[in-house]
Amino acid sequence: MTVDRGAVQASWNRTRNHLDAARAHLTGLANIDLSATLEFLEHNELELAFDCLVDLGHDLDLPLAFWQHLDRAAREMGLYSDALHTPHLTAADLCRRHLAAASEQERPPLTR
Image (cartoon, rainbow, N blue to C red; front, side, top):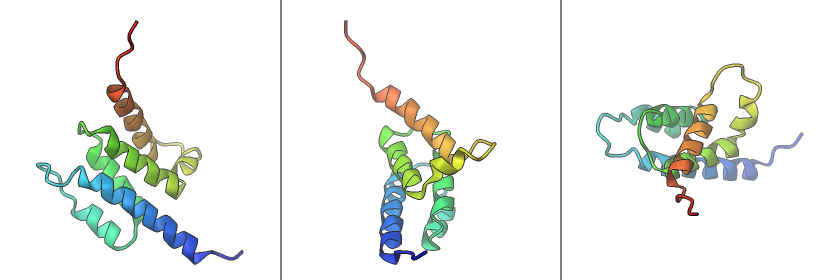
């Protein structure tokens, strides 16, 4: 099986861009330490950076865009398909839950 290194690098770049965009929502918030996330990104440990960002954002009221970027990163890395085979709650599962909740909050009210 031949690996297309260009395609792999392009996928990493797309994932990194989504993680960086999500991280930007946390920059400057009080009591948020992004050092572990930055270290994981520096070493191209994208899944670990994803896990850190989900963990950091879990208890915060962050905008839908934060969760959308994490959702796109999870899809790029194939984390949702991996989560189907994991018996415990994963960061990808938490991302989906927060994405759904944030989407509901930003949905305009129905008019009758």
